[in-house]
Length: 219
View 1: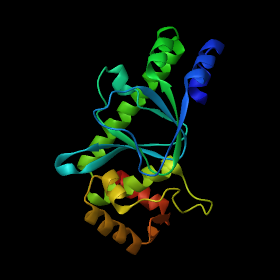
View 2: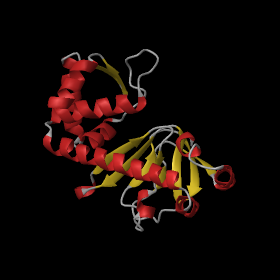
View 3: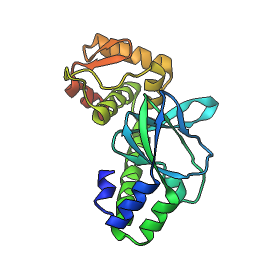
View 4: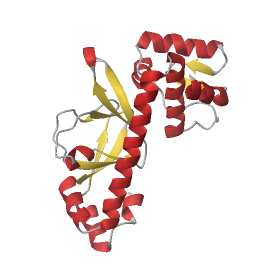
């Protein structure tokens, strides 16, 4: 809660501590579903979370990856609507939940906190606009390379400085890249042949990060 914490006075901090609940989620467990009414400002304390939306034919698109310590689940409340996407745990995760009614009341009396959410929403909107263009205009190679770079930028490397610090099922990789699972598998195999990555089950080791970034940018 560090970013928000610095914007609160002592009374507001006390209210957050008194009202925040801590929840644990198993791998793939749903946090909230599309159509649910928003109740909480969620903050990821430990683990990894994905935001998803079901599209045509039941295909799932991963919209955004959440890393510690990021906030999510509040846009729909501010828009006075139900959730238009779902959130679930990528791996066993711990999350804090603060009632959005409390957040709303604090925003009414705290301009700094209001600006925090305005900035967060603006950054997320800009990122979404860029991602829409990338997912619809890039070729398959560019989309998969971008997905791997997104994973790297969000979660980093293991201690070996090469293996992505997240284990991805091929279906999840496809959902992040806006392609079919078969295309994701085929393109990933091509990257292996080109010595860009090494794949061991769900573990992906980046061999040539610079070239992957180039493919992601121009693919």
